[in-house]
Length: 114
Image (cartoon, rainbow, N blue to C red):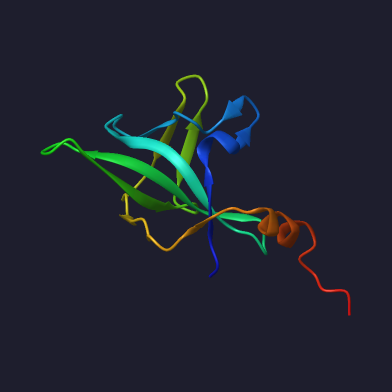
């Protein structure tokens, strides 16, 4: 799967962007904040949320990915993305490229004119 990173400040929803959105468990325990998304340009689908987590022991930040098909609820009043069930996050892959102008063209004109 060919994925591209898009910063949370560039991902819009009906009341704004994903920038600064907290990521919490159903029990309101904060996991981190939405840093961005990983998009598959050819299908124009968000595949993962990129979450900036804080490790409590060392106050070290780590970017992890949360599958976009995980059960989540966007609470707009509290600017929170609540993750239901088991939270399965993996470290962000370093080789992911940022979303580019070429990716925009791929998303717009994904079929070939044969």
